[in-house]
Image (cartoon, rainbow, N blue to C red; front, side):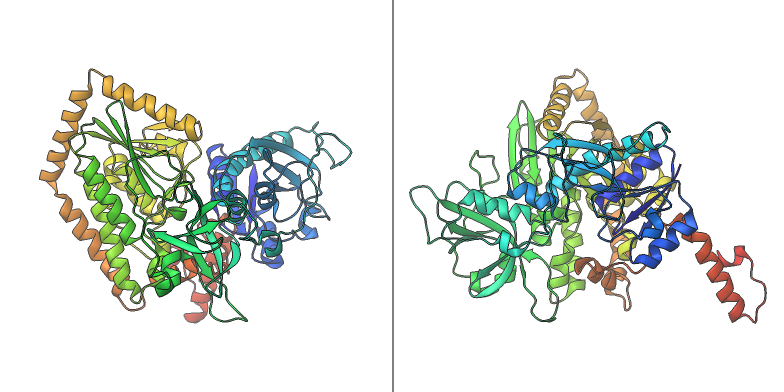
Length: 596
């Protein structure tokens, strides 16, 4: 079928639905829903059989939904309506939630129901649950809807609140009044739920030292509250790795990130580590260190390590997958330390919802000299990947449960084996940020897929689903399970490798290949060539990297749909180029070949 994805942004949900539909042979085009005019124009140009709206903040014009079936993917159970569906579900501690495919109608979220899928809620952030459970459920309902759309006998179910399975309700958009924390009354668990329900956007507005900030990234602290509070409820009592710890009525909670509230149109702000935002206001707080060796105590940590049956598991989970210079250096030091442990396999276990997204663009944007900080950050992640690539005394495995973007992809490819959750999406979108890219991708990517395919991937800047990734040799194993079941499957695989009679041969083969590759072209030359391009991208005047980074950090809305996504706009834009060139050459004919 011809399917138009109408979406407010090319976000993780839209990317995943896109790759799933392409994999099934559909012709798919995308229109970013900028305004009513662009939506109407996109539909007229593409003439789709059906329109799917994976992530839509705008009302669909009546001229569209009256003439073409439009399916809205809503992150709620049957009958749930409103813009804060997942926020309310988390804050109200719903045991089960779901995703519903609704047909667009005059009343928002009240159209006929085409499909629904449910999932068990878990303790977690809104962005984390959205990225994993909601997107998994969304794919199910989209595919089921398309099957039913092609069945002439199927009739979608009208929304009827009298039915026992329609348990949702119309809820208002959650306001800061519903999110507000009362530090003198709210328990640690209540505060955790409130911050989790606002994670990503908009955050929970709160007051620290007389200034209003949005709070993000909460972690319950079990140890600091033992034997009584170390401070009055709401008081800052400690700091660690950029996060701050606040006392509560029954314990303490860590806040990893803050964003100042802008007032009356003053300059926009963006999210940063809490200590960085607070500056000298946090100087007096004691720094509480944490060992990376695994402990059952619940506390804020970004890197931890454990061993089981001759296998080392190095966990790292950075907020939204972004890795600053300091975080890259700490992870590199951890790799350097644990690769000397008496184990046979080292497994890198990245974040649950995001494996890694490479360098930390927010921290770079906040630096006094963003170009200089970019340079430090890219060298730090290169050092990390070099430590993985030169680990020749054991097999390395990337266990990728969350999505990987930009430098996060070559971070995974630096390992000998790459195991991925089936719902993961890879996106090496260096070029969109005006960058050539580093992280030894010119070595790790071609050795898996060949030079031509590596060039296609980096030039196209399109998401890659794991079925395609497996077909082209980008990954080795696909695991359909989530969370602990995923971990268990990884454990079974790597322990089987350790016990294999071929382990020594596999390790010997790895050592020989690394020596051979180093002889043909040393790793330092790959790095030098990549960094030569990156230096130009960072420092040359009028580099597209700096405005692109600003747009990303400040979340500047798109003004048009990128041509790589909008199949229906390619010929139109080509015609515009031809017309423009004819005007500039005295209306002389200009061939398509010349334009290209």
